[in-house]
Image (tube, rainbow, N blue to C red; front, side):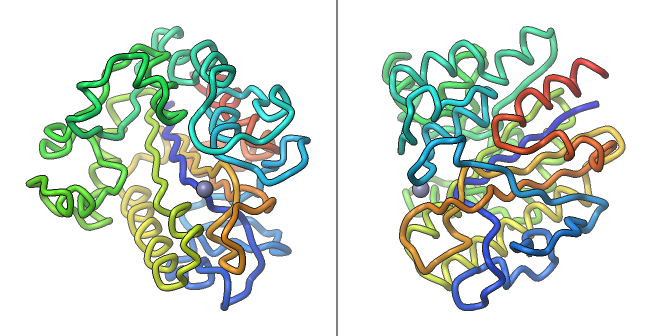
Length: 296
Ligand SMILES: [Zn+2]
C-alpha cells in the first residue's frame, strides 16, 4: 500500500453560497463539499470529511501551526498556545525535525518523497537558512531527503508548486507548460515510485487572501482538474490518497483572513471509508499514514 498526501493550503468546508464560495463552481464535484451536506461521498469512491483545525486554541488557524500539526501529528498550536502564521518558528522547527512524517517513513525503511521542485536560488542557501522556510521544507530537511530541481520538472520527475509552470515562465525560466491534466498524470506516474509521496499546493490560500472571486474559481477548477486526472490514472487499489488543508480561507471570500471552518479533507483508495472514520482533526493525518504503511 502506498500513500499520497496532497496538502492544499487554505481550503475549508464553507457554506453553499454562490457569491462567496468558489467551490460552488466545481464542475466535477471533487471540491463541491459544503457545510450541512453529510453524505460525504465523492466521485471515484472517495469520501470527504471536515477536520478540526482550531486544535483547541482560540483565534484564527494559521499556516505554521496548522502545517506542523498536519505533517507531524503533534498539536503545535496547543504547544505554543496560539496559532502561528507564516513559516515555523524555532519551537515548531524542533517539532518538525523530530516528528516529520517524511522522516518517520524513512525510518521505517520505506521510500518517501516531497515532490515539489525548488528554484536554483534555494540550492545556494545554507541549511540554516533553508530551515527558515516552509513547514514542508523543514519536514523534508528533517528526513534528509533530496529536494527536486527544475530539471526534474522538465524530465517529468517532479512538479513545481504551480504545477502548470506558468509562474516559472513569468520569472523567465524556460519550462514546458503543463495543463492541470498533464500535471495530474505526472503525479500519478511519479507517486508510484514511493511509499509516501507529499505534494504541496498553496495558490488556493493566496487566492483566498486576494478575495478575487474569478481568481479563486480558476484555482479551484485548476486544482480539481489536476486531482481528477491524478485519480483517473493512479492505482486506487494500491494507494491511499489523502487531500487535506491546514485551515480554511478560499471557501469564504467575504473575509480576507483564514476561517475557523473545518479543513476540507478528501480520502480515496482501498479502505478509504473505514480509514476516514479515524480522522477528526488535522493532527490525526500523520498517525493514520504511519499506521497504514506499517500494516502493509
Ligand atoms: Zn494564508
